[in-house]
Structures are given as structure tokens and as C-alpha cells.
Amino acid sequence: MSQEDLRAAAKEAAAEVRAAAKEAAADVKAAATAYARELTEARLAEATENLRLRRPVADAESSIWMRPAPGARRARLTREEIAQAALALADAEGLEAVSMRRVASMLGVGTMSLYHYVRTKAELIELMGDAMMAEVLIPPGELPPDWRSALRAIAIRTVATFRAHPWAIEGPPSTPGPNSLRHFDQCLEAVAALPIDMPTRIEIIAMLDDYAFGFALREAQDELERAAQGESTLGAIADYMDSQLATGLFPQLEAFARDAPSTRAAIEQLDQLMHDKDRFTRGVDNLLDGIALDLERRGVAALPDVAARPARG
Image 1 (cartoon, one colour):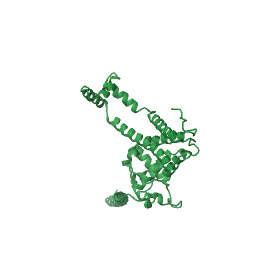
Image 2 (cartoon, helix red, strand yellow):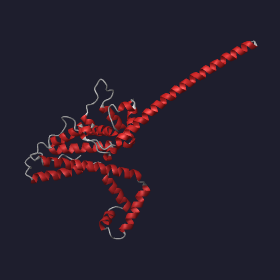
Image 3 (cartoon, rainbow, N blue to C red):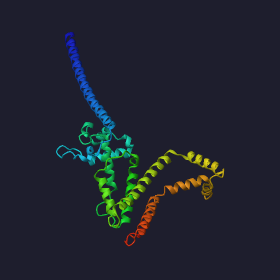
Image 4 (cartoon, rainbow, N blue to C red):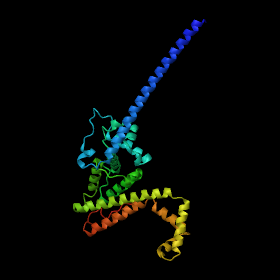
């Protein structure tokens, strides 16, 4: 190959390198621009979300339930799909992990697109809360006909729902949605046959609801404490109790500890009792016993289901 051919080949190769470099630079620039646009959109969405969360809690007139869901022609998602994605994220990582950006990513849409369906994180939490209430509902046609069995079934289902979503027990309050109203309506249906006034019906419903919610709250807190405590913590608690029992100032606790081989064993027995899987239903039955006795005193004992108590299981 002559010198002239070599120079021509080198010139051609250099031109190819410059063209390739120019093309690569264009690709990098396009990728950088796309990334910057995506990052800007995500940051704008996050900033918008944070700004909205700083606003006072919306009144009922601005609640998500006061707006119709997006029409079928524009809607790629339903409120139910959004709520289920958010619930799955909260169940896996806790409520603090739930954000508009994370939920949008799970649903395969852009963050700004999600704002077409849900305006704020507070509204997203409202959807989550109402989706949970759907789990509390007794399926159509399955509500027991007598007041006692019906309230028992609703209470058991309530605690089961909080056990499935333990993060929700201390979550922020939300505006009642359609399923919350259905739950209340179902509770009223459970006591509709009782010949008592409406305030008394509401009071009975509230007693069961308070017990179920309080039990679920206590159980969730206990689980957190158990997870944080180890064998050394249990031993330290037993040692502290022994030192206090030796003072003679706690005669009832001393008697409690004497029923077990050791103070530590007594604490373990108490822990087992508190976490007995049937403890909630026993408590519900005892509460219903008290309600039935009160109804009897009011002269409602003539109802055939007042004294009827379902078998414990």
C-alpha cells in the first residue's frame, strides 16, 4: 500500500471515529436530557405532594369521596387498584414507605399521572383506609340473623383486618368512605331487630368497636415490644421483679410469682396468656354476656336470641 493510500485510509478512519464520537455524544446528551426531565418531573411531583401535605386537613366538601372517579374514557386505573397497590407497599415496608412516586411506579404510570386520580397523599391514605374497611365487611348474605352472632362476627373480622395491616392501627385518620358507611350500616343491621332505641343501639355497636380497636392496638404494640426484647431483656425484667418482690411491698405480685417455678417462668406464662390466639374471642363473648344481661334488665330477655351464646371455638 502506497503512502497516499495509507493517508487516505487514516483520514477515513479518523472521519469514522469523529462521526461515532459525535453520535455517542448526541446519545449521551439525549439520555441526560431525558433523565433530567424525568428527575425534574419526579422532584416537582414530590415537592407538590409535600406542599399539599402541609395544608390543613381537607374538609368533607373537598374529600376524594365528593368527586366522581375519572371517567372510563380517560381512566387507566381504578381507585381500587391504586388502593391495593398502596396497601401492598404499606404491608411490606410500613406506612412511611408509601408515597405517590412509589405507588405510581408499582402501577407502571408516571407520578404526575397518578395525580389525575389522587390529588394528595392524604387522599391516597383515604383510599387505603376504605379498602381496609372492605375487608371488615361480612359478605352479602352471610351476616348471622341474631344480634349477638352478628356483632361477634363483625368484631372478629375487624381484628383480623388490623392483624393483616398492623401499620394501620396508628395511621392518620381519614374521611369515612363508601366501605366505612357500609360497615356502619351492617352494624346497624346486626342490632336492627332489638326493641331498643337508636342511642342504645349505637352504644352497643360502639362498645364492640372500641374493644376490637383497643385490642388490636394493644396487640400491635405488644408485638413491637416482643420484637425489640431478647432473652437478656427478659432476664433483666425477672431480676428487677425479684428485687422488688423482696421488699414485701407487692404481696399480690409475690403470690403471682409463687405459682410458677421462678419469676421468669411466671413472666413467660403471662406472656403466653396475653398472646393466646383465643383471648380476643373470649373477651368478645364476655362483653356480649354483659350486654345481654343489661338487655335482660331492660326487659328485652323475651327475644329468643338474647340469651343464646354461640359455642366458643
